Amino acid sequence: MSARVRSRRGQGESLRDDILAAAQALLVETQSEDAVSIRAVADRVGVTPPSIYRHFEDKATLLFAVCMTEFDRLDVELRAALACHDDPVEAVIACGRAYVQFGLANPETYRIMFMGSSEWTPDQYRDELMADHAAFTGLVEAVGRASDAGRLRIADPMMAAVLLFQGVHGMVSLRIAKPNFPWPDVETHIDLTIATMGDALFLDAPE
Amino acid sequence: MSARVRSRRGQGESLRDDILAAAQALLVETQSEDAVSIRAVADRVGVTPPSIYRHFEDKATLLFAVCMTEFDRLDVELRAALACHDDPVEAVIACGRAYVQFGLANPETYRIMFMGSSEWTPDQYRDELMADHAAFTGLVEAVGRASDAGRLRIADPMMAAVLLFQGVHGMVSLRIAKPNFPWPDVETHIDLTIATMGDALFLDAPE
DNA sequence: TGTACATCAGTGAACGCGCGTTCACTGATGTAC
DNA sequence: TGTACATCAGTGAACGCGCGTTCACTGATGTAC
Picture (cartoon, rainbow over the protein chains, first blue to last red):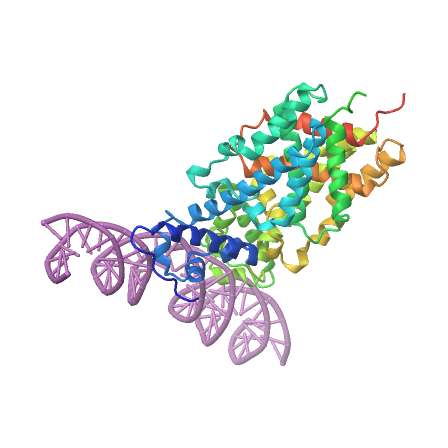
């Protein structure tokens, strides 16, 4: 790739953003975690491999930084879905749809974030953090509102959130892992998955 | 490792079984796909690496052969669970429990079988085949019996089987991928997951 | 019963690969005097 | 206004790694005559 113009003194941090963007673009284009090597990223940015280490401790840290920005995007989309509905149950349902759509639209990112081994995860991105992440707490809050409205079939909103989470995750991760399985049409599949979870966990609105 | 005694003429196939057993043992002990290298397997069997290629085309084929024997074990356990119950709904529920237990007891195998990239899958183990595999067809049949008994809430038994499958998969794969997440107690988690799926898909038995 | 030979199971050594990472460095740029 | 110097962004070359895989081979064993 063409060489990048060297940053001015004090502007070194701008390379960090370029590295993140290049790594993400590479991931999106190749849909392969393996294709995102230190060398490939450096090449794409127009810089030599050792430069990466000025900004990221190691490869895993870089990869998770990329995923974290994707995670933030997911959070934005889930909150947007929640915000579209006054009814708390409808809000949660919309949130589930948005989650599935995000996952299917970003399969390799989804794979890294939710299907990889926790062994590879750098310390600053430990699993526990996921529970505190905005995307998940947003869901817990929304389910909590449904609970407050007396619309939840089970007592514990946190447990209900876990069941919802694993329900949509089951669909997304299986479709990603087994793309050649004779799945139903994707829209039908989403509708049925969401409807099943909804029926199982929520009560209809009292009139 | 100690050297293996060379097979007699005509007995060469016995090495194949030893290789499979060694690879599987390595997978179980290390719980790491990466630890199952051609060299490590050969070393464990007491043979040199090129010998492996007499019996397996390449590494992926070996790994999938291992998984296939595990798959057969899963099938046996699921059928055993089905066979314990006359009531078709109870049979399916028991099948779900057995599935979850198998997955959680064999996390790395489960990861390879259901959470890996389909890119790595050798041709003879393509995803489509999974739909025809005994373990899945057994589930479809059991759901079909529930349907015949008028106990299914949705019309299509195949679709119901898919929903059940992804339901239990969601729980298993998330617990494997995120072991440090604050999950509920595993028994409670199984009970709630299965009960939720059951309530959503099945009708109670008419008295 | 003996011997030459084909076959078969497995070996030893090496290839090439791309990777993550480290090290000592260079040269432009801003700053202090 | 000029100059010496410290700093900073990034370089070039190489390390060591373990891997999957290939190749030409060896030597024991069964078989045909």
